[in-house]
Length: 612
Image (cartoon, rainbow, N blue to C red; front, side, top):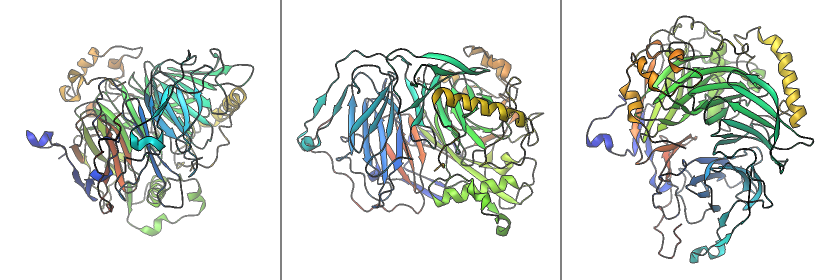
């Protein structure tokens, strides 16, 4: 069972947990935080976020870690399960005035041992491009002024042992002509060295090119594409300038977006409770899904790009099939809002009854995605094989996790009895707890269900890295239009979206809106939610938002309280799992059999060390 005993045990912070793979253990020596290790007072601050990059250096220790705490930003060598963390010598650390970092992302394509490009989004709407290795700030976007950097404090490393620092301030008047709202998500476009996408709490997304300027006047836009609850504009200008594109998506804040593993599709979740999936190049809406109630806060793709998981203010995790365009399962384990969801590509597995049945030509493997790890590559190859040969007696298990404002970590297994309910199960099927595994709603059976929403365009052909067992002929006519749209984007924005390289403010939880206080039959309480253009009561019971009894309800494999403050980070690495909480502690959980720490824990700071 996922739930634990009552009383003291339920409030105890767990330092280990067991799954079918074995024992996961918290590694106290591998904890990263501010150098003084003092818990951060998180009231009113933006969520702590963590980004990783591997520099592929010859030393074998190429992992780098970036995280934000309040108005501070840190960049460390990440030693993981190998050695204890050394907090006394960050590669770079910055303190910002007048604004706070909210999110960041490394460019994995251009990262080297000598240089790395890091994008940082801020609470006041700016986006900064920095190089933490060279300690340089190269560009600033959405802050038009004569100065090219934010107010900041850079530490003087030569005098660091004395607790001294030098400050550099920019006392100028600045304007944010593109968007003045908080940056909620920033990511590099997969396969691109220069394009990146930024989402704001205004509900807008902007596509930038690091090689172009933002201009000194407010941009003028020209409509490129419009559909149900979204519009895409190009920047109308005599010379190419940022932003290249402006996306307006849904109602309210756009909380997060995620690119598919092949980079061709974009999943967005918004405060209006909708998941919207777009073909990024042709800016076509591929499919939509509505939360049970409240906003959606997080989203992720399965390693093979066939499933999307979301989490949000309904305390649920929801699994949506990209191929079928429908909800296939929900998971209930959290007692508050779900802040992060993520798939574990290293535990996701396929079991086969006859190993020889997976043999195939080399061409079958050329379009598979590359995760940089043999385990993930093997997993994805076999997942694609499983879905392209439906009659084969194999067993598939997708592992994903979630963390939330209830300070709990949940792990979930998505198995073939949920994914393929109309097929006989193999003998070696792995275990999944299913609380209510009923049949899908009428009209949702079969392998080719139309994309939700009658006004949405026909389903687009799926990417080459996905199996083509059921591709609709309706997409043939749209290919011509897609090409025209893409060439239009290229004309206005000077992009090469088709010529990419090989893919290598949170609110307090309102208890009366908690899932624990709403039964599967109490749909009348949905009317209490603030109304938007789409009435939630009208979507309930439709393919957009099935009723609770119409889809399987998963129970987590484990559900453990692992922090004192709300959790904001969950990242699966090959030898560990990384979590972080709002107090500013980044924790490493060693996978079974992977712990090999060899050094002693950090010593406490001396009285001469500086406290920020």
